[in-house]
Length: 367
Image 1: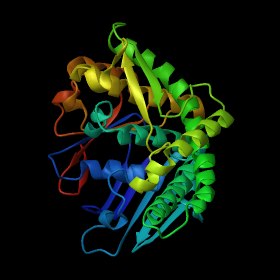
Image 2: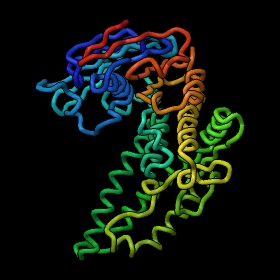
Image 3: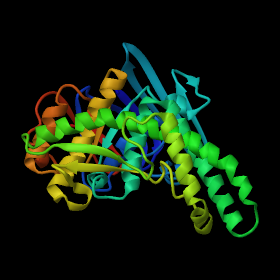
Image 4: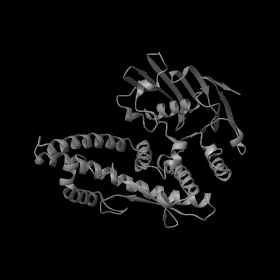
């Protein structure tokens, strides 16, 4: 991304930034607007915020709407991405052409974000790991993002029906329609996750070895109640899904909730035969989180032919010297990166071409 224009976004009234193609440092005290800039880049690249699902929270206080514009070069072509929000009406344009679906935005500006919350990726709840894999695949496959959205709607409808059956307000026979849709969509999601996890696992193992000088190897395994392995076909997944769903039918009616499917699956992270989600040290967990994020960069490079933009939100203060150095060495001169920090002391190892912006009270000044 070469330029970014913000109007009435979060605590920014109006700001125009011209970025370095390598590293851009956003320096300032807490609550001044550093993360808001990263969020605006993420928003204009994906159509959604990584911090909130409520669009109205993005609009500057006492304003009616917001406007973002980003300029970038992709495949030797100039692109202008625009996003406006007025009330509940969100409009996205690419080179002045309005998009009919937000999903059509995916692929123009690919992004990987790494924040302190991601350091909990390993030891945190399964939902964090599901979100990690889903966001990664969605950026390279709009179809997958469509599957996730449609699956969520089917899941909600099925859960509502389970509650009605439990309360004797609907017959059990009505479940079959929603069961089939859940199985069809869920199996496609699981198959895509398995395929992506194989590639991501190879890269994660390599990254973990490099960071630890060969002392640790990271393995990723798909954790599900279904009887399958990494090479299971979609038909095999469907068959297992169907059988397990039948086994759980009465219990799910009693609970009024769907307890089987990709919305309940997880990713196991194994280092030297130890499940580090439960038994790993804090150092191992943070190293694995870093390895996963670096692997994500290489995975997306392999899938789309170029590196995504990297957003690093205040993670350098959370990493020790060796991990900071490795991260800086990895991104130097090949990945456009945006780094927020309260000061420059954690970036002593920074070399090469970069820009520094001082962020203060919703204002960004290049220094």
